[in-house]
Every structure is written in C-alpha cells, then in structure tokens.
Length: 242
Length: 218
Image (cartoon, rainbow over the protein chains, first blue to last red):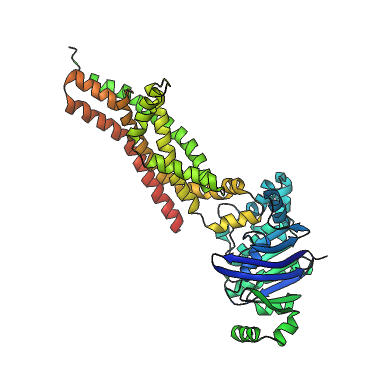
C-alpha cells in the first residue's frame, strides 16, 4: 500500500490549467525527485500534497487520508507532511531552538521540557545543536535551511516536501543542506523534492519524475531517465540544464 | 457676574482636561479591543466575516465622527434608549477608533510576508495560532508608530463630544468664554493644554519610527 496516492489531480489558476491530471504513487521511504522547467507545475503539485493549494479535480491520499477535508483532517495531514521552502521562512523573532519548539508546543501541546529536548535532538540531527539560541539572521543561508528542516522534523513528519530548497543558497552552502537530505533518505524518510540539483537527483533519488506542461511526461529510476531520455521534451530539458 | 482671574480660568480648564484624558484612554482601550476583533475578522479566511468587517470599517471611517456622536446621542434617544452624553461619547469614539485601528493593524498584519503563514500552516498551526505566535509578534513592531500617531487623532476627536454637552476641555472652554468674554485667553489656554497632551505622543511616535527604521536597515 503506497503512502501517497495521486489520482488524476487537476489544478486551475483562473483560466490557466497548471495540473492536467497527474497520477502517481509514492511508497514509504521512497525518495522522489521532481524535475522540469519553471511553470511546468512541479511546485504546485508539491503544494497540493499538503493542501497549501487546493486541487480542483481528482484526489490525493496521504496515509489513507483524503487531502482536502475538514480543518481537523487538515491538521492531522500536516502533522504527517512537512514542508521546507526555497526562502526558508524561519520565524525571525524566534531563536533557532524556539523555531523548532513552536509547533510541537502549540499544535501538539507538548510540555516545555519535552519540546526543548525534542528540539535539541532535531537540531543535532541537522548538525546545529550548538546554534539553539541564535536568531535566524545570525545564521548563514545553509544553516537557516537546516533549521527549517529540523523544524519540520520536530512534528514527527512521515513525508518531507522540499520545494527547491537549495535554490536560494550560495553554491558553497548547497552541499551541507543536501547532506542532511541524504542522511534523512538513508534513515528511511519519505522525501519528495522539487529540485534543480540534477547530480543530487541522480545519486539519491529512487525515482525521478519529469514534469512538462502540467503532466508527468516521463518517470523512472534516475539512471534510465538521465541516460536514456525517451521523449524529446526531456532530452531538450536535460541538454539545457547540463 | 463672577470675575475669573487667568489663573482660575487655567485651573478650571485643567480640571476639565482630566475628562479629555479619561475619555481618550477609554476610547483608545475599548476602540483597541473592538479594533482587534474587527482586524481578526477582516484577515480571517471566512468570507462573510471578512465582508462584515470591511463594511464596519468603511462605514465608520467614511462618516464624520460628529454624525456618529449625533446618532449615538439623539438617534438612540429617539428610538427610546435613554443615553447620557457620557455613554454616547464612549460609544461613538469606540466605533470611530476601532474602525481606524482595525484598518491600521490589518495593514501591519498583511505587511508580514505570506511565507510566514505558509510555514506556520504547514506545521499544522491554525489561523489564530499563527496570528498569535508568528504574525502578531512581528506585526506589533511595525504597528507601534502609526498606532501612537493615531492616538493623537483620538485625543483631538474627544473635543467633538462638547457638542452633545459632555464637559471636557473644549466644552469647559466654551463655558468659561461665556462667563468671562475672554475668548482669546480661554481658547489659547485650551489649545496649549491639547498641545501638551498630543505633542509627547507625536514625539514618541516619531521616535519609535526612527528606531524601527534603524533596526530594519541594520
């Protein structure tokens, strides 16, 4: 039984259809990289999975629960599905530790000691346990993004959605963030990444999905997709990024 | 006819100015409370609530405070509610203040990048939780200068309540003028007292603005 199921998902922004019937299944522990040109619908697809965008047709299931229900169902969904953004979106008025502690305290009503211990563990996981008391603006971009990952993990998420999380980073900081993702993948976390890091997709992803014009154009193991692209659109795309 | 020395005029004005201050404080506190509720409705995801809050803000921002005072005082009297000048003044000033503060604060809330909402929402936090723990702490910083600045308008707005007979600084001025026929002395003194109340507020608002600008540019 797959952890996430998408079936004929469609999404419109006014008159423009950005998702034209996307179907796929993702198993627990799988690492899926979604690639494609900007405007191909990959970020929208990601945002539909945790209901930051509502979908207009088709259905999305996460862990046997339909996406797009009541407020209570939505909250349950978001405890399972974490999201990390291109622009970090850390809370600037809170320290790294407080950023990680906030949602467990407020949403899960975890007591302060437990939440603190949990936050220390999560920051340790991303190698930042010594930055607990630093504010976001005292951290580098790579460190901020690692705090954002720790913040999502603190809700004991089963799936982490990553929306171009290295695109806003200086090149020398990309590695440390990808390193964290790699260790999460090896621990069995389910990861869905919208990414431009083809090298990373090649080495870490179990499956690569190429989106084009709101559809899944081609998908499969990275070696097949990168070495023997079958469609003209993917061949062109790979030529453009290499 | 009684003779008033300048000192007696001044002393009487100061006594009345206490009511200007009390009325301003009440208007600001109750207006702030109602304004907070209206702002929450205005920024919420509920279409009906947003629309009601919008109508409320437009109505009380778009009509003169004087009309609101007349309606609260004479209007409610006409339909059978006995309203004192005091309660009519409080009601009208609360409506007026809340509408403006709601709109000022809405602007401050919406100035916070939408990524903050998205991050909090995807952590499972609801609208009110996000507003309280993520948005408000950031919005309050930018809300302080315009809020303090607006409090000057509230203080000056209380002068209008003299028209429905509430005895505050302006009304006391009119009464003293009637008794002394020294309009220049009386109203100049009243103006100085208003200025003494409002000027520190303006200075404080400007000071906060500068301080926050420096912090933002750092």
